[in-house]
Image 1 (cartoon, helix red, strand yellow):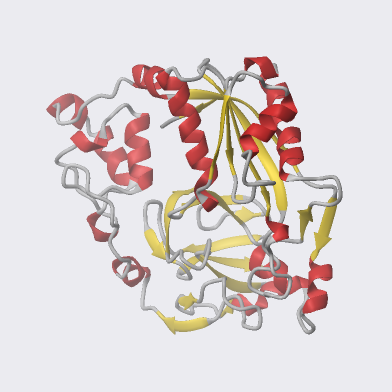
Image 2 (cartoon, helix red, strand yellow; image 1 turned 90 degrees about the horizontal axis):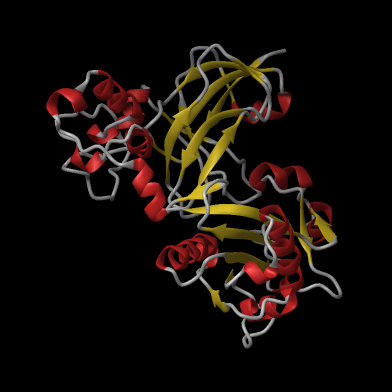
Length: 379
């Protein structure tokens, strides 16, 4: 028997209170399959795909691309036969209700009704303003800026555009209509961006990537031995994690980083002698001195290269990539190996139900070069 469920805007962490809907790739009335990409969302720390939680038919969409929405506010209404989602069930014609963040303690429901809202208009107008500085006096959504730049238009030079999004922000639809009306050609009110020159001056190529995980996996059931009364289903519902990898005897952050780096070098078609910069982002190197980057360079056989560690917690990987890109563009290095490696199992408290299920061990690596091709990495 089919049921109606309301799916809320998800949370990406305890400190994330709002999400930007960058792109919506589904329409009301569409039949979707579980795992199918429906939208692209952005938080303060990341951009990620939103996938359908079940098979079903999209009956209603409560927001539009470009909107900035509070975590827990309604996203989609779906008709489905998946009874495992009955906790989100609503009645035909029922108004959308707000749900709590999905980072609630495990003993509470992942999604609970708080209070009804009269309409999607109320949801939109209640969204707090973006803290970023407006471009040329105009507030832009990320999707709108992306579309403008893809069309070769500098958003900071645009004037005379009316934003119809929350807080009068310029949405993707607004900039598409503005461009279609011929404003750039007729008014000259926007500066055309030389995208080819910008690419040559500011980007590098991610020529190869690789990863490595330990041999040993730790299941939810193993961790749940410390928490009688909890179930693996609860853990998956809240975190999406079914297992995590943890290092065993003979494994270390350096050994994982070495494996990941070798995979990345093989994909890039480069030898270790081609690398002249090694940057490792990590919270937990195998020892304070020498650093993880120096250890990695030695393990790989890289003799003449700058090597250092960078510690910026969750953001470390992004900072390390930007440092590598800057070194290449500045002439400090030609080819850079950028790696992140963590062995968080060594400091995770197995008796803390809020964190015991979240952390594992692993490494990822990317080879950056100044060459064309591959995935272009911008500043």
